[in-house]
Image (cartoon, rainbow, N blue to C red; front, side):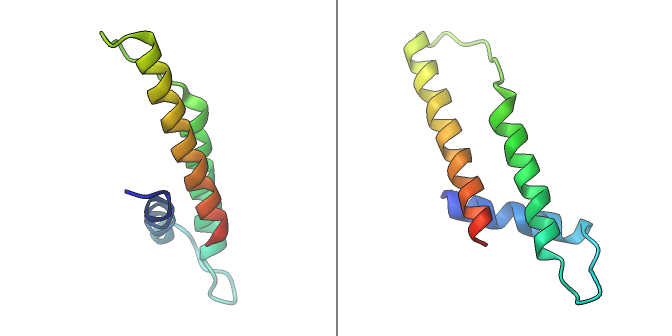
Length: 78
């Protein structure tokens, strides 16, 4: 899944839980909820037991963080 696809999926998943304002707009609230969720993922730094060498774990963590930062950028573009 691309960062663009994940961004749209997250925003779309929050829409049913948002209330509409007087103009019928819900997207800004859904985007804000999605951004909060992505920040939580970025800041979580989960520790998983693994037999992989540390360098491999470091690369995986860096790649995951970069992916979620790209998702955040894509949410802001929506």
